[in-house]
Length: 278
Image 1: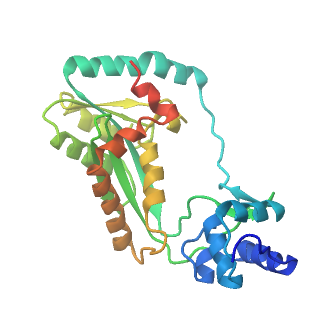
Image 2: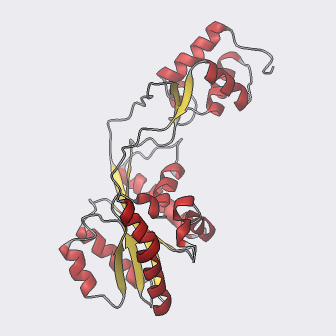
């Protein structure tokens, strides 16, 4: 059996409707998002005809289905602030850290939800696909920080991210180093809170905080950790409770700590290569 055995019009219509009406796990396959490989598996399961991914792709194009990402909301960004960061602020931080023999870390906080769906799936052109999610919702949060040397530090927690949690993370970071740390983060209100400023004032020889321009997540390589985590969490086995989700999240971070080449790879993405450029 092979691609020379084309599907009939009725079979094509049935597969197309199945993709639009169901997620793969509804039909005995793995995951929540359709890929060409999974649609090929569905075709084989239904009609015992095997197609390559390019072959499936030809049918998808014929059916008017496109591979789609969820819509992302545009944000305001100050181009001048970004220019100043690239040309003045970041070079000054790097020079200071070098002179002080200090460590530079880029940090970010993230949240992982049990009902979160990441990636893309196939749907009718012009119509965003809908994935039905469980009503049993729970979440965990994490704070991480990475360096160009491949170091990764993290903390997983279940409470909301606030100044108290940030101070706890800062204390954890300081405990890992015997020299000063320059930590670069976004302008989250917790990072700029009175409590955090007071904590930093008492540890100014150990750690210093620097803020990225507003609405500029692409300047922070630690944002890629967030994306990596959500891609890496199991797709076939979903966490059944908060404790399992926290354990899966910790396993991801522990795995990345043992893979410094992956961590340094975050800094090679186009938008953050400026960090490596002298």
